[in-house]
Amino acid sequence: MHSYFIRPVTAAAAAGAIVTTFGLASAGTAQAAARHGLVQPVYATTQAGYLAGNGASNRFRFVTATFTVTSCSDPAASHGWTGNGVEIGANSLAWTAAISAGCDNGSGAPVSYQTVDAGHANAPVPLSIDPAAGTSLTMSIYYSRQTGLVYVTVTDNDTGDTDIRTHLVGGLAAYYGAEIRSVLGGTVSAPSASVRTALFSRCALTTYHGARGSVLGRWPTSQIIATSTGLAGGTVIANAPVLWNGGRQFGVWERTTA
Image 1: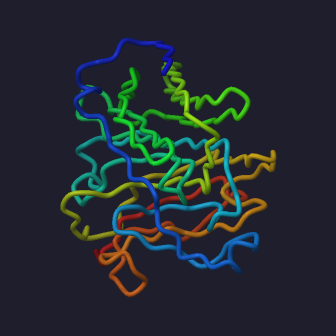
Image 2: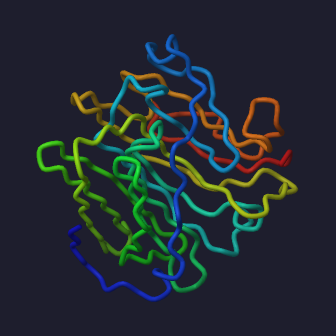
């Protein structure tokens, strides 16, 4: 594994590294996987956002999104939200790469990435960047099939601080599906009014064959809805019901039904 350090790793970032959630189960059918545009939702207990490539028909080499870093005193953090991030390999338990950023407790938000190679889960790696609450953060993951390297990049758009890491995967990775999402964990409680966990913008994806798009593109796209059971019949914890700007933007909200 190789790393390019722009800033030194802080103790707070290392201690607060966010462990990401891999292998989101897809509710898509073979018919849905063959379609483009929005298809039926998928359900989870700890994630809300959007999943591109519902099924194993699409492999993604690039994902990026921008959002504002949240303070740990924000109401979202009081009701179960733990972080925001992006992932390739969201339909696979064998090959995944994900980045997550938590909340800022006064010393900056912890940011970390984690990979799974051929079914082997590697330990989370804290990044050296520690963005402050209220700042704009851009994160991206790029997989080069030519070199076998995964490039993880996080930039604080307010300060210009950037951390770039590379991870050498063993074998030819198959990153089925890409995801942009908020993560929930621990004790989830219902806010008195809907609370936004993230406003994602500049969302962009690229497949192995070079097809490009936003959350929408030449692949099926599903909204990820967090429910109490992880099933359609559960009470809604968080969701992202609206895409706008051609699928480049959406918000995730914790709901009063949690």
